[in-house]
Image 1 (cartoon, helix red, strand yellow):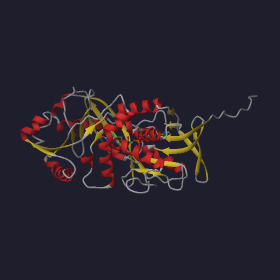
Image 2 (tube, rainbow, N blue to C red):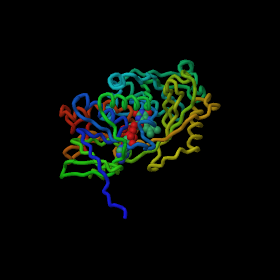
Image 3 (cartoon, rainbow, N blue to C red):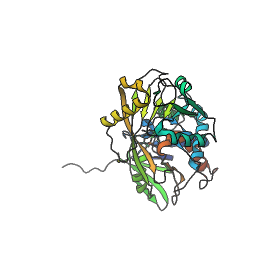
Image 4 (spheres, rainbow, N blue to C red):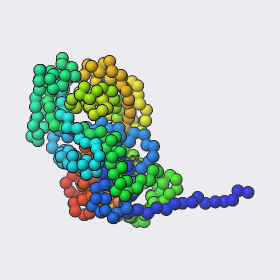
Length: 372
Ligand SMILES: Cc1cc2nc3c(=O)[nH]c(=O)nc-3n(C[C@H](O)[C@H](O)[C@H](O)COP(=O)(O)OP(=O)(O)OC[C@H]3O[C@@H](n4cnc5c(N)ncnc54)[C@H](O)[C@@H]3O)c2cc1C
């Protein structure tokens, strides 16, 4: 007869457990570790999640192209854009750096109204240039001269999100943090206090504090924590062309498509916005559409095949705004999620605000920090 054995349960303790190891979780962890260096911080991250947004993104830092009116989120985005160089120097000492590419907003027939709205709005915050004819052709020879007869040039940049994700992870380890590569399965509370997190491999983690930063997967996880988090995954498919550096000089940002050059890695073209749940497939038909749209902007891409394509899930809150701060009704739980289309841009400021909330320096119920 087989002996009856009970599973061996490993119990870990930590001061702060960050659940989710995307750029948002990493930025929060690093900022909090800086304010409290003696803290033991662990990041719990599911090992093979396909579609992690932080590794799928294009990496555009484009607040002036993403917003057409003032809002808390716009101000937060501008703050993060300004803070980016310092953020990278502090937490990614060996790179990557922001590539300060200007953003071109083509004013083709179809996009003239958008370009006018952006010109009106962006000129309140930055110097913008209107390029047409020869000036536009000289600035960006790859663009279709017949289709793009004029464009706005506004400040913006790009960062390689995969390199940044790798660099932030390495810095987190270097500063004494640890990763737990497992999936969260269940949680235990004593009244309003989270007492334990149970993992797929039966490990039990007992944190003093926890931070939920699980991006598009937050709706289901929120339910485990007794929180209603109105987060929907919005799938994005994106593709890359291998072209030499300099082939495209600017980020070209049209309403339904963008072309973004990456040093040493050609151009990324993106991206779809699909409300189809967690469907991990890369669709060949979508690639053909992306290629066609890219060729309409830059005809030289006609003869260049897509060299790579992938998908990711953007975390969209019902009201389109991220949620950051203390979780209402929970004694030791913070949240930072729902960054939708701009999580790469917003990662620095999110970490900074969360660290302020952590130390009690910031008022988490006012301004752009919202509680749930
Ligand atoms: C195609 C595309 C293009 C984009 N382009 C841009 C852009 O140009 N500029 C910009 O600013 N933003 C862009 N974004 C948006 C940006 O990528 C996201 O807003 C941002 O990455 C969200 O980061 P996150 O850390 O919240 O989520 P994620 O990076 O998705 O990280 C969530 C983490 O939680 C983990 N997790 C989930 N469930 C569990 C569990 N049960 N247990 C343990 N861990 C779990 C996952 O494994 C993952 O590592 C783009 C997104 C996509 C998809």
